[in-house]
Length: 338
Image (cartoon, rainbow, N blue to C red; front, side, top):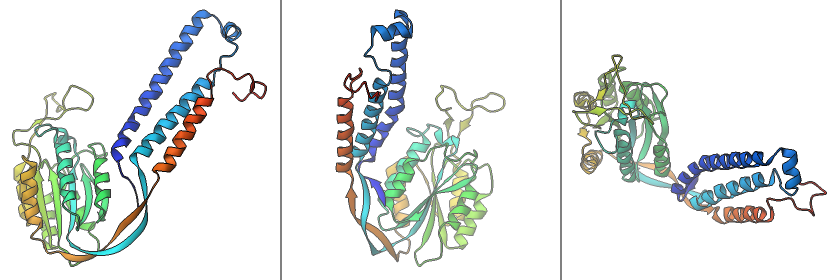
């Protein structure tokens, strides 16, 4: 089991492409200024100690030190000791809609982010239960198999976005079917499927599949995200919205009727997510009525921290960088290291 104690620092890795672009831009500006002085031959005579590779090597080392330092701050940890414990819990498959309509912002900041925050808070409540993640749009995929590892569940959750499923659409039925198949061999623990969606189903009949799940003893709860009034669907990185074939702006609305019918067929509960606290309270009250069973779970009780190792590596890289000057070293010029 590998994890980061402070994964929030990893977001700073997104600065690396910007640093690359800045370096390339600065080199282009530098070369343009030098070209105004004269040809490469003249510049070499005027600046005999100038090195072509040394500034680049120093940049690569600085970038490497920056990367390793961020990994150091994120505190990578590898499990060194595990033990098997017995817990009483239930088995849940969380099924999350990732179709484009989930980008609508009739709930803040949008349906997708509101859903992820809701699931994250729900996972925090499931310390003794098994949980799995399924994402769906025009097709359904298992994002994380059912497990008691809530830390991994939250890590997988953070990577979910509307582009994670290549086929667009809303196949709720396919997601329910995949959830039923993902539970594994029957156990004494009661099972449930939790669907988070705006209910805009375009692909299949989820009501029949919810009934099948109910017949197998699996309840289907539905959390409806959005509002009946709806809102346009923003197109990423533009100021425009999704439009139909006639050029009209598409308004995505919460289909409460579909959500309620799925929950009814699945012997579950429907809750509109207009208030996260209320939705969680209602859902948790339903989950608390489920029959719990004793399950053996492997937990990691000790971790090896690689903070010091990465700190040493960062320091070594910085020391090497300091000793490499941007101009040629006359003492080393005969061996032509650079």
